Length: 418
Image (tube, rainbow, N blue to C red; front, side, top):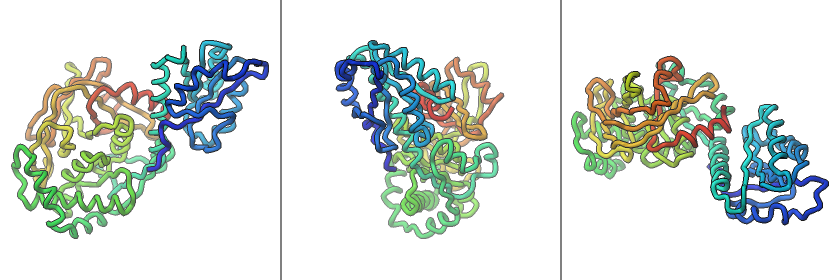
């Protein structure tokens, strides 16, 4: 993914035709901190059409010029908002307000960054965040997600039209036959997996059900997936993993956990919605993500239990090597999460335009034998009632990541999707 560097952007000043002051006298004090962020002052829109730009509203009387700038670039900008920079003098802010009001009347998204002074660090931080958001948007448009096998049959609400993923969110989905993965698994030798086998088993708190052969076979899936990722030059994958159990008597639980631990997004069950969610949140937060089933809810306590048979082991404090819950075969991972703040989310809707987003905290990990192996009890903050999961669900799997990220995720979604 050769995404646009997040610290390179154009600054296009607009000045009234009646203005007689040198531009430097009006905006000069703001230019240096903007250049520090990677900005470059341009007389016109950047020739490189993929380069993000901010319109610096130097004076009043520039509303028509702002609209004309947007009109000249709107087709190549796609879903990008228009970003205006205003300052305290020369009727800059009134012009920015009027122009953005008109653009928003035409359903064009945008934002005004108001610089109170050259030392307005919070405002410059907001510009920096906007540049990061643009970078994530552009990266998603250059991303290839490998769908290995079709989505599992039970994912009736999580099987979107592939053209919707491309047109709304950006990634291209590359369809790959599951049989190709299965044939590669059969070619992986024991010698290739010895190092990963030793690392996986020695770091585990306990190995319970799986035999050494079952663990070896599960690690072979990891090496087979690595070969497919390299062959198709993929940036993320989602695997119809349950068929591996019926066809090869092995699971993808270790493989997906290991890939996610390494920072490569890998989703289960061919669930493209969750894989897209994982990819998006990882790009915005640089953190590991976990997809899981909401197995139980407690409306009175506003809490829920999440469970799944795989988890990146660098997200948990310790883990046991278990069998896969539903089948009792091969390898699953029972991880134990430390307490702490988390963010939960789910994308959905026919056009993947809806978002359920909540913050909470981990209360405890579980080890119930009637749920998938990794289990975590999350108390959701009161402002995010979990009854919405029952009244207006967007689908099964939720995505969980460490820390409080609601604000940045919501801001990005509102700017580029909603």
